[in-house]
Structure formats: structure tokens, C-alpha cells
Image (tube, rainbow, N blue to C red; front, side, top):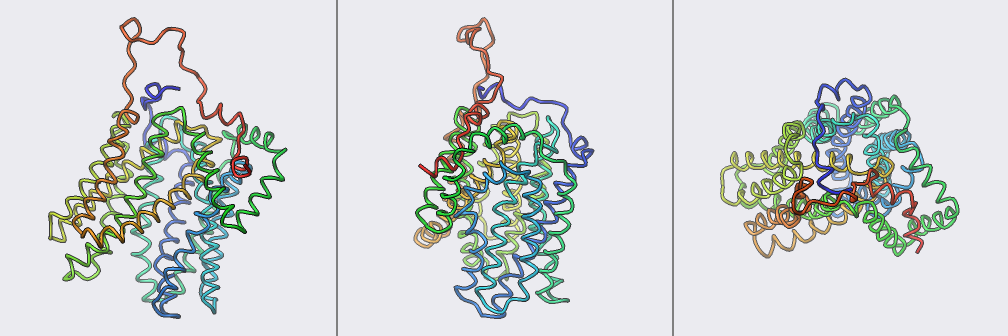
Length: 470
């Protein structure tokens, strides 16, 4: 299917249509309460470690343990989502994460805390792609922008609300109650998920994948076991996931370009994290806690941007995505031109809006352009690879900002956000089709296929396990 034929022109959407759908409300509500609890643990976990064991490398290792499962094994999570009801997978992931959080106060050694952090990371590894796979079932066709806007908002608002609520809880009741709060929110999130309808849209694709994978089940199990035990097997799994991702997006210029720029944006995000820390310490020593204020301003902008994206539904979505990334990059660069704390907060507030608008377009376009049966596998493959790029950007930022200076760091962040989308502008914004009968018009027999190329790839049933077993 050509890019120009898939330009978002569907009418009839609207927030009211999404809000009238009970399944969409339950999915958004589940994500909201789950992310709120997770944000509380993000505040409570380092405090718990520092209170018991002091400040040191242990804090970094403990926080990193939450990301390790997704980086090391996330390429295989898509198979689980494909073979099982994503509603059940997401529910079990939420319950497992809540149980792990509730056990934090009962630990007596550092390794126990790290093991529980690892368990929470495993829950996220399965929960996120399963949640993404549920969207086509509950978001009405034609309302992709509004539905994904609500989802992005439900993911962004807890980054503000969670820490804001965690402070009073920790001050009045103690840090341990933060983990109890996440356990409760996980139960609520799981209860909302259990009331969603069973997967139906992707059932045929998953059934076809299961039939084709029957003869390879033993090899896949062997590879999965090897991935857990050996770093070399992990590398093969990641490489296989990358090849599987290429198979899903090739043939669709916009979808492949969106995927590429998702990776480059994670590099920019890693650079930005290091830059903001240096920026707050370099120019705002007179404002205690400036880094927290900067992140909060960006989070507030992100929450509003998720809702504002629907205002641009009549625009070419490729241009909206490009402008969102470019304007966010401009905001980061402009940080070096001001020494006023309020101007810096305003710039990052705007950056958060642009980032969320671009994110909504990204999620909506993936939902429209990728068959429902491949949604879970796509995100299960994308997320761990994205985490690798995020780590790379963070490590590079530590070196580049230290050697080039804070000002150059802001420029690097802006360029990393803007340049990739500008280089891919012709693929993100395809040319309009030439009307029939005019010079350059396509021949009549070159009809647009009615079946997405990704679905034809899925019918050939090339699983991740085949790539990793090679």
C-alpha cells in the first residue's frame, strides 16, 4: 500500500466517540492508575535504598535492574503477546508488578531489593506491548488521534501526579507506604483490564502464526532458554528482533521512517537527561531543586500536548510529526539563550507539548498502518531496542556535555531531535497522487492493493524465534 493512500483523512472521529466507549475508558484508566503507582515507586525506591544502605553505586544498580529485562529479553515478549490474549498478559503483568512493589518494605538485603526491581521490570516488559495490542479493540476506527491522545495523556499526567502525591505520603506515613500505594493501584489497573473484551481483531493473525510456528516450538524454546543464560544468545535475540521489525515496516515508507526516528529520538532523550542535570547545576545554583522543576514543566506540557494533538487531525500527519520534533529541538537549543528560571520552565513546557503531539501522531499512525495482529510484536521489539538507544544517548551525553560544554550539549540535543525527521521528510510526507489522465499519472492496472504489506508478511509467518535460531 502506498504512503499517499494511507494519509490520515478519516473523518468522524472525536473525543466524545472515544469517551462513549467503555473499553477505551477502562484501558485509559488502567494505564493511568498503573503509571501513577509506578511514579510513586520511582520516588520511593532510591530513598529506601539510601536510607538503609547509603548513597553509592547500589542506587544506580537497583534502578537499572528495572530496565534490564526489557533490554535483554524484550525481543521475545512479542511472542507471548501474539500467542495469548493480550488482556490476560497485561493483567498478570500488572498484578506481578504490584506484588513485587508490596514486598519492598519486607526486604532485609540489597540483593532482595534488586531482585524485586528486576521483577517489576519483567512486568513492564510484558505489560507495555500487551497494552498497546489492546488499543485496536477499544479505540473506534477514525478516532485514532483522540484515543491515542488520551493514552499519551494517561501516561504523562502520572509523571506529575505520582511524585506530587508521593511527597505528602512519605512525609506523613513513611516511605514504605509508597510501595503499598503502587500495589493498590496495580490491583485497580488489573481489575479494569479484566473487564475489557477478549482479543478478536488479531485472533486470525495470531492463529496463523501459531500454526506456522508449531514445527519450530522446540527450537524457539531452546533459544529462549539460551537467551536467559548467555549474553551471546541475547545478542542474537536482539538482532532477530531487529530483523523482524524490518519485516513488519518495510514496504511502508512512513511507518519505517517513524520507526527510525523513534530510535534517534531516544538518543536525543538520553542526551537531554544528561544535559538537563548539567544545565540545572551550571546556571541555577540559586534555585534549589531546579532539575525537578524543569522535568515537571516538561511533564505538564506533555500532559496537555496529548490532548491537543487532535486539534491537528485535518493536517497532514507527516507534517505534524515533523514540526513536533523540530520545534521541540528548537526549544532545547533556546535554553542556552536564557538565564531566567521562568523562561527555562516555559521553554521546557513548550517542548513537552511538542513532544506529546508528535508521540500521539506516532502511535496513531502505527495503529492505522500496522495490522492488529502485529501490534504487540512491534512494540515488544521496538521498546527494548529503544532502551539500547536511550542508554547509548545517556552515556554519550556524559562524555559530550563534559567535553563540549553545556551550551554545545543543548545544540546536540536539538539537532538529534530535528535532523532525522528533516532528512526523512520526503518519506514522512509523501507526494500527493497525480490525478488520472494527467502526465505522470499511474497506469490503470497499477491498483492499490487492499491488503497491507505487513499482513502479507505476517501470513508468511516468520516468527522472531526463527531469526534468533538462525
